[in-house]
Every structure is written in C-alpha cells, then in structure tokens.
Image (cartoon, rainbow, N blue to C red; front, side, top):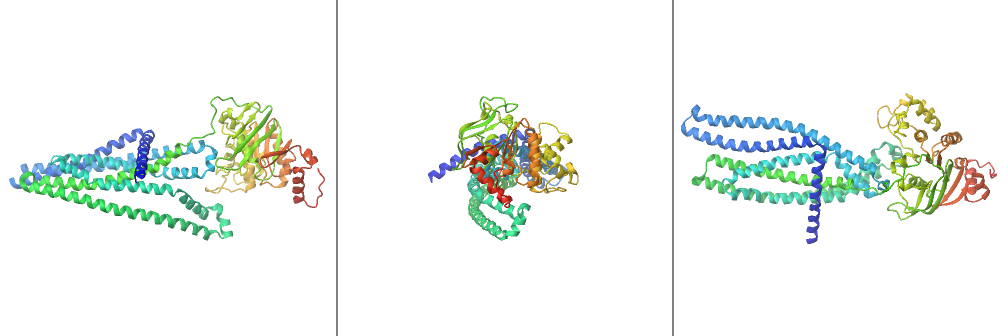
Length: 615
C-alpha cells in the first residue's frame, strides 16, 4: 500500500511538471488568444453571481412592495432588478458566442503547433527509433492524441476556470451567513474530487498499458480495409482470420473498460450521497436560522441558489478537473515523444564535407549491430570503394550489404571502428552536408502522391529544376518513356490515393525513383537493388546510363544480379558480414571461388541450355 501511494505521489509530481509544460505549450501557440479566452471566462464566471445577488434583491423588493402596496415607487426596485437580470443573461449569451469563436481559433493554433512539433520530432529522431516497437507505441500515443486532446483540454480548462470564479464568488456570498456553511460547501466537493482523480489515473494507467493491443487492433483494421492488402486477403481467405483476431482483442479491451467504468460509477454514487447529506444539513440549518428571525426570504433563496449552484458547479468542476487531469496524462505521452533524443548527431568539432571523393571510401574494422538486436551485422569489417569507380557489392540475403548503405548515410553509427571519406572520418562531417553528398536509391522504391515531375524534383530540393533537366534525369533512368505514356505526361498525378491519380507498376516506380537519384548529381551514388523490378532487356542500357552519370563520381551498387555486377569496375563479395572476395568479374571467375560458383548457378538458372565457359 505504501509503495503504491509513493508511486502515485511521484507520478502526480511528474504530472504537475507536465501540466506546466502544457500551459507553456498553449501560451507559445496562441498567447493573445489565450489572454482573450481567460478574460471572457472570468466575465462569464461573474455572471451567475450577479444573477444570484439580483434575484435576492428582486425577491426582497417584491416582498417589500407587497407589504407597502403596489405602486410605481414600490415596484421600481423590483423592475430594475428584473431588467438587470435580463441584461446579464443577454450579455452572457454574447460573451458565450465570442468565447466559442476565440476558443476555436485558439484550439486550431494549438493543434497545428502540436502537430508541427510531432512532425519535426518524427524526422529528427534516429532511424533506429523506427525499428523499435517501444518507439511506435510512443509515436502512436502522441500522434493519436495530438488531433483531439488540445481542444478537449481547453474546453475543460475553460469550464474549470469559469466554474472556479463562480464557486469562489458563491462561497463569498455564503460566508456572510457564517464560515461553517462555506466550509460545508467545500467539504461536499472532496469525495467527488477523490473519485475523479483516482479513476482518471486508473483509466490512463489502463490506456497506457493497452497501447500494444490497440496498435494490433489498428493493424488488423488496416489489413481488412486497406487497398494494398485487398487482393491477397481474398486470395488466401485471410478475412475471417483477421476479423476473429480483431474481435478477440476488442472483446478483451471492452470488458476491461466496462469493469473500470462500473467501479467508477459505484464510487461516484457513494460520493454523491455524502455530498447530498452535507447539503441537506446545511440547508436545514439555514432554514431554522431564518425561521428564528435571522434572515429574509431573499436570504433563503440566495442560500438555496448558492448551495444548489455550488453543488452543480462542484460536480462540473470535479468533472472538468478530472478531464483536465486525464487529458494532461494523455498529453504527457506527447512530451514523452518530444523528449526523445537522437544519438546520431553532429560531432562537437566538424569538418566541411569534401566536394568530391578524391581517394576512397573506407570501412576500417567496423563492427555494427542494430539497436535492440543481438545479431552482429558486421564484425571487424574492412572494405574500400575507390574514388571515381563503380563498385558492385554482391552476396546472399543477410550478408550485410544494405547495412553498408545505412552506415554510409549515417542513419546509424558503428559500434566499433570507423568509416572514412578520403582522410575524413564520416562522423566528423555535419549530417546535412554528408547527406547532400549522397544520392541513394533504396531497395523498395519510395512513392509520392504527386505529379511525375514532382516525384523526380524532390530528389534535389536545393535547386529549382526546369522541365528539360527533369526529363534528362528521367531519360537517364529509363523513366521517360513510362512518363510520356501517361495522360498528362510529366504533369500526371501518380498514385491512387487521390482523385485522377495514375498507378505505376513496381518496375515503373523504380525507374521514377532512379530518376530522382540521378537528378541529385551527388558525388557519391548508392544504389540498393536498382534493377530488382526491371526486366533483363533493359539492364544493359540502364547500366550504360549509370556509367555516364557516375563519370567523375563514386558509386556503390548492391545487387543480386551478376549480370549487373559483371559490368562494375570492382566487385566485393560478402558473406556473413564480411568481404570474402574482391576483384573484377574476370578475376573472380578465374579464382573459381564463391563468386564463380554463384555465377555459374545464376547463368544456368537463366539459360540452362548454355554451357558455363567462365566468361
């Protein structure tokens, strides 16, 4: 019990810090709107106090008028009180309309600010975060709440502030009848407050603990409704299986949620009974006091309105407070995400990136394993890529070939050893400058729902490219014919996610991605399986285009196709995270090692009627 209380105490202390950050975030996003919002809420909080005080005056004036006889002079105070009550009601409606407009503007600015922070953090964290389930849980919580929680938090903060102003004013009005009544009002709020805080904490604890299950639910929903999976889902009959998995998870979550709500409602009823008992005693005491001649009918009505109003306000405030607490707990996940720190960063002292590779790119005794993984991808790895050459890197799946590209682009840093460009250690070059040196084509072509021209132009956003430059890049990549056949040519929207989009085949997307890489004109070119979706007829022509592009540059091509590797200036053969053979195509065939054997097998698979001749 003590340990649990201490844990909750620490969590609430941490939550107080999170709450301060929320206020700072709101202020940063919309300072002037927030001042206007708070001012209007304060005025709205005073309006019920004016109504209660004027109602007392109205009742007492009517009683006095009835005793003095109905006349203009005796009825004028009551009429004035009625007019003022109506004026307060009209002003309240006008202020409420103004508040809705201010809160909408404020909420939109805050939502955009939070989304901007999430987007900025998403592109700044290490690539390693995207390979961690914990990161995806964190991102899911932050992104899931960014769209709805700020508006809900503002609504509840506003309600709490407005109700607090009214409640303090009512307590001040009641205080004139004795401090005991004011204390009774406050005491009646405590049980409900305890229930709200405790069960909002339990609800957040449940929500946080079920993140993985909710992500699985989202996963099954994507598989059941996403267009990318529709064909295979039907072919393999996976629909019923995924529906059963979805129903199983939803059944468990639904049962847990209903159990929590059932316990909360029981506790809320008990708290309400305590509050009503305190109110009944206080109202009885006030009635006895008035019957004893120590008050007027207006006093009874004022006290009744104050007591009933305070009870309503207390319920609303505890609800607001609970929702504020709940939303701040949920938004703490946003701060958890925003506090993630990248580990691949610029060195304290950097060296400008070279304009060209003049000697070589070297891996020197590099050892690397992926974060969170137990398998070593590279161990004491050494490799040299000479400047101005096209180097092919071949080997079976899992040999570590793609890892080399990720290390060269500094998506990761080695555990041991170093990577050198000429005589400069890779980690000493500023990240932005290093990545501007590199043009990469990844194994799976990245697609953008934009025009064909824009799909190519994003390859180099540092410059403005005319249509002829984009076309030249497309011609070099073999994408020009594909684009020319589209309805609007280079202005044709690609992808099927939006209206009038045109989908390409995997091979056609690969050519467009290659055009993007060719446009970049970087001194280092890294290609990962660049012809995996390309037919064999186009390989030779494509490689000649690559050779023209790579003139004066340094290129590394990862490939399974020996018909591509054979055309490279130098071939490195990798197995189990190490280079086992190096040389030209003819040198490796003459060595009759692993490369020669693999070449023979690949050629026989492609054309079994041909005899292996070693050339």
